[in-house]
Every structure is written in structure tokens, then in C-alpha cells.
Amino acid sequence: MPEIAEVARIVHFLRKTLVGKTLSVVKAQDDPIVFGKVGTSAAEFQKALTGKKVVDANQQGKYFWLIMSSPPHPVFHFGMTGWFHIRGEKTVHYRQKEADGEQEWPPKYWKFSMETAGDPKVEAAFTDSRRLGRVRLVDCPGKDIRKTTPLKENGPDPVIDKDIFTEEWLEKKLKSKRVPIKALLLDQANISGIGNWVGDEILYNAKIHPEQYSNTFSSAQIKQLHKSIRYVCQTSVDLLGDSEKFPDDWLFNHRWGKGKKNAVTTMPNGAKITHLTVGGRTSCVVPSVQKKTGDVAGDLKNEDEEETGVKAGTKKGGKAKVAPSKKRKADPEDDEDDVVFKDEDSAEELQNGNKSGAKKAKSTPKSKTSQPKGDAAVPEGRRRSGRSAK
Image (cartoon, rainbow, N blue to C red; front, side, top):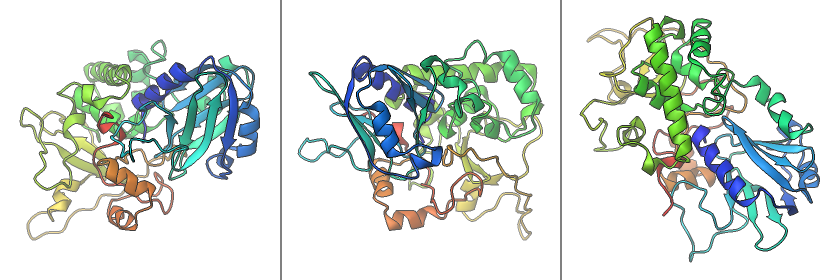
């Protein structure tokens, strides 16, 4: 799923190509899920934007929007596989297969497309193969968009809302809850924009175990966690999600070996990377760095041990102790936060509804509350921002 950095990348391109231009042609596919689930229709969207000038583009975490010359304004959420394409621009962050060097237009699985007036014209399109993205219209002044649903229900953006997201604010938030810290970070009602890979990167940088309860950290640990959240989010946003420019010592650059034969599963310094699952969510952890210093959630599963036929907590000749599972509160537009792409082939398989790929994905544990029924997860691997387009 596109997270804070990937959304920042798209906002960058929208500002670069659409701001200041008038939308002369807007076409929208009738989709009762992408539009209808949030009270909008393709016809309403098309009518509301045609002939309007794009004044600005902004974001809050995983949400982003266009401010038009007059209300209503469109607000977008990518879901798991949503993306914004701009003809002639390489907005997609994994290598695309090109047929004779020609970009398919409109792109496959497009939900709406836009064309600007004047010369040179700009063509843009929103695509979503799995229809977990959302497109809505909000009828308010542009400056008040963040005061509307769903943005007002989401927490502060750690990059944009520096005045709110302070160390004191974070300490109060952590102490007010008793949930695994990884779950707290992923809950958009707490902090906007943090998804699976960003959450893992933050916790690795802060030397915090993902399953330690949020109310068990010392003041020094909270200070470091705040610093790590700001550092990881700001750096990835500044680099527009270009993973080839991420620091070499980031976990992101070394986390993709799970399930691959002969893959390296260590950091450059030799520290082992393991994968843990709680409630269907996969977390990358470096145990030698991320020590448990307080109470830890009891439903922890070690995927690496399970893959080798050894279950966590099992003694030789004995039975494994099964701890009660704790349900994670679902975000209706954050259903598949931990889904990642191994490469462009995996992404294409997913988009094409590859049956064998879907069958394989069923082996991945899923939380009943974290994913829509019937939607298979994609195995851990290299995600959309894994490689720059060449």
C-alpha cells in the first residue's frame, strides 16, 4: 500500500503538472465501490471537475486532494493498488514493462482520467485494480478540507504537523493506550501516513520491539521514538519515496529476502532479520537491536520458525502454547497495509487476477478485521517503491 512517502511523490507530480491548469476533459468509469462507497458517483465526479482550474494539491498521511477553483474538491485514498499516472511522467516506482516504448493510455484499470486545456496538454489518470481505493468529493472551502471526514478523524501527519506532533504529544498518546507499539503506529487515527514498511523502519531506527506495549516505554525511549518517526518520515518524503536513494543502513534495503531461496536475511553488519506475525500483520525485526524492555503482546508468531516447521514456544516433544489472539481495530481504508510487491511481475499478477498467485497468497495469515473478506494478501517482498524507473 502506498504510504506517506509514495503519496508525497504523487502530490509532487500533481503540483508539477496540473496546478494552474484547467481541466477541459474529465472521464470517469462507473464504479460503485471506488466512488460509491464514499457517497460519490462517477457522473458527479466528472461534472464537478470539468471546466475547473486546479489551484493546489496537498496531503495528510495517506490521503491527498486537489483544491479546485471552486467546491467541491476531490479527495483520494489509494487503498492497496491505487496509483496516479501522468502521461509522459514516471510516477510509478517500479520498472514498468513497455511495449515498443509506448505507454498504454488510458492505463489499465483506470477509474477516471483528466485532460487539461491549452498547449502542452497534460493527461492524468487514477488506476486501481483491486478497487480498494476511494474517490470522494467534499463541499467546503479549500482551506477547510482537513476539517472534513475522513481527514478530521485521522491523526497528525508527522511531516506536515510538526507543531502538533511533539514529543509531549507522543508521550501522552502512548501512555493513554496499552496496545503493541506497531499496531499504534499503523492506526491512522493516531498518526497519519505510517504503514507497514515505514512502521518497521521507525521501530528499527528507534531500537524498539514492535510488540512491546505502548505504555511501557521510558522517557528516553519515547524521545528516541519521536526522533525516529520524524527522521524516517521526513527523509522518505524528501526523497519522494525513491528507495534507491534511501540510506544504506535502512532496514528497507535488506528486508525483502523472506521466502526467497538463498536470499540474504541479515543487515550489512551481520545482524539477523526475522519476521513476526501478529493478527495477520508481518513485521520485520532485528532481534539483536530491537530488545524487549517491557511487557509484550501475547499473540506473537514467528514466521521464520513456522516456515522451517518449528513453532514458537514449542519444546521438544511438547505442544506449542497458543496465546489468545487480539483483534486489531480495522481502518476501513487501510485494509491491506502490509501488502508489498516482490517486483513488477508480482504487481502485474495481482492486477491480472492471477489465480495461482491468489492461491499462494492464501497461506499468509490474515486478520478478520484488517482485510476485506475474500481479498488475498500478497507475500512479503519488494513493494511499489522498491526500484526507481529506469
